[in-house]
Length: 223
Image 1: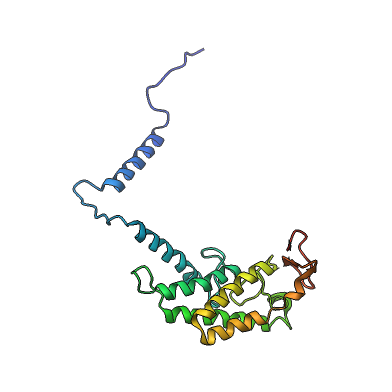
Image 2: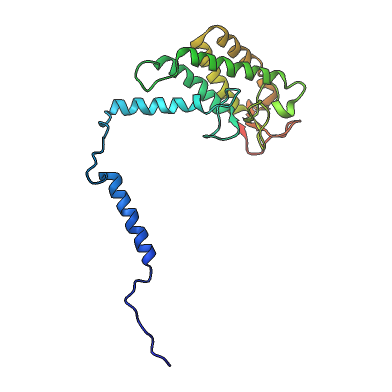
């Protein structure tokens, strides 16, 4: 048998070079290239950091909206959530109130009011479609939890009393703040909901209906 030969050559030279390159890039990112001065922004104070965090969180509800103004369930998601839209309506109030208080808040009161009006106009319109097309638009004034940009039922979506309540809470908040036509639409949206349709007896509501004629989800009862 031939004796085994050994070699001093590294077994994984390409991996070593890869790791070394990553370390060099990391050092350059932190300290900058030789002879180059890296400008650094002054650190934010606690209040400035809080203000920026609040503004960017609110901005999500303004930016992540398709043509109907409803708010996407997550960033760049194709469908919107009526619960996220409810939070978005409340966020519009915050944005309108905080506009100009710092450079972080860029949505004007007029822009926020126009967006709230647009959302509520569409929401009431979707309610009006339920009589002839409940399988796409919902039942008893309640919209589907997830909807596309035309307000129609997204795949595997249910009619949810909880999520509709969040939408209505945001709508009424916006209505109280902006008044006028926004409040009129918010009140109309609220008045179009027939909560008795979802009563299950013993003062309980069905949490959700996932088919029409309604079939209650077995796990979904609320006191």
